Amino acid sequence: MSDVGGWRQEVEVEVEVDVDVDVDVDVDADLVVLFADAACEVAGRAYRSLMTRTPDPIFADPRLAKIYDQVDNDRGDLDHYVEIIEELDGRRVLDVGCGTGVLACRLALADVDVVGVDPAEASLDVARAKPGAETVTWIHGDATSLPADLRPVDLAVMTGNVAQVFITDEEWRATLDGIARTLLDGGHLVFESRDPARRAWTSWDTGGVVTTVATAHGSVQTWTTLLDVSEPLVTFRHHHCFVASDEVVTSDSTLRFRTLDELCDSLAETGFVVEEVRDAPDRPGLEFVVIARRSIGV
Image 1 (spheres, rainbow, N blue to C red):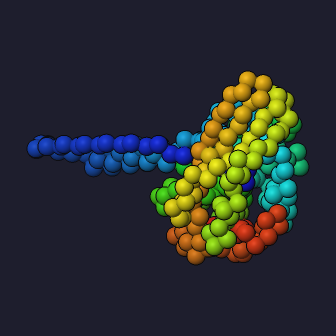
Image 2 (image 1 turned 90 degrees about the vertical axis):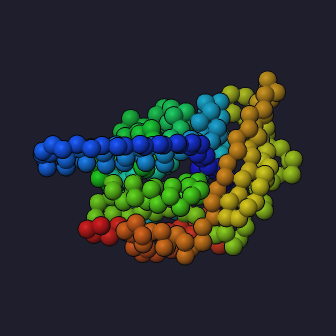
Image 3 (image 1 turned 180 degrees about the horizontal axis):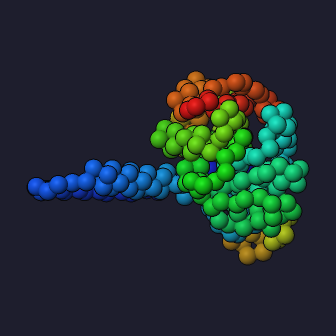
């Protein structure tokens, strides 16, 4: 993920149930259980559907997805993830919010069995065309909608801004639950999140200063504006001007900044034990790099 980016969710649900039943019949207990199980499954699918996020245009618009890696071309932030995965002997890894597949393909080329999941089909299209992509299992969706028959993993990661795009506590918990269901007992979750006390957003607005990037699709001018700060939420806008056509494509994103205590509490509530919190080598003093282990038997 880039230094600033995220997903957005647009959900409107209205449910009205009116049941009036007066029946005097013998009911098979097994049939009642069967219907109850089916109802729970339907409710679960509906809940997971609500939790599925609509990705921001920077990831979902094919025009922006195709130039994403060229605009955000410094992925030194992934080096410490590779090191941690090696340290924890991760052999089957789930990359949540894999985007254009930079980390997933890098791991695959190192003979790691990788599952990459992302809600932006345009980003997955870019990922699938990269060297190493042919051995990665690509899933269009998010951690709440992973297939029930997906073979468990021993390690999951959320790089860049992925852990901060979940705006509500419900979204965040549903994501952690989904990851926990996919992890083997004792498996690890590794992710980063910015320290809100450092107020990183104060440097995001470029003040109208434009950066020109040469891409395979022509020169693109980029700049960022800060739209709103309502802590713990911060909203900003990416601007991309395709020089040849003078077309400007924008993408708004909102991130949530959680404290370390909030992160640790949410992990404990979903069956994780925080083993270590490290610094981010590429942004020292600005982020928490959390290494958590799924409790055995949870």
